[in-house]
Amino acid sequence: MMPAPKFPQYKTLIFETWPIERCIGYARNPRKNDHAVDSVASAIREFGFRVPIVAKSDGTVVDGHLRLKAAAKLGLTDSMAARDREVTHEKQ
Image (cartoon, rainbow, N blue to C red; front, side, top):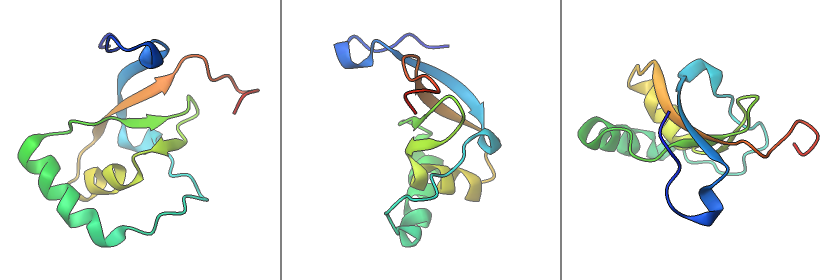
């Protein structure tokens, strides 16, 4: 597990490696960006997975749906994920 960056808003984030199948796309995600999957997949292939998928502890993706789709297209089995340790089931 990586330590959180030195920014106050990140103090409660936990950075982990998660299996791709643990990440669940938010069903009401308003973005329709499937046309960009190939471009993001190319960037991940070239530069690696640089920006984590942000998710709740239950695996629901808060930010990073496109990165998740691109990682799946590339056949990656794991992704970098950040979750907020302060988000409880009641707050979700």
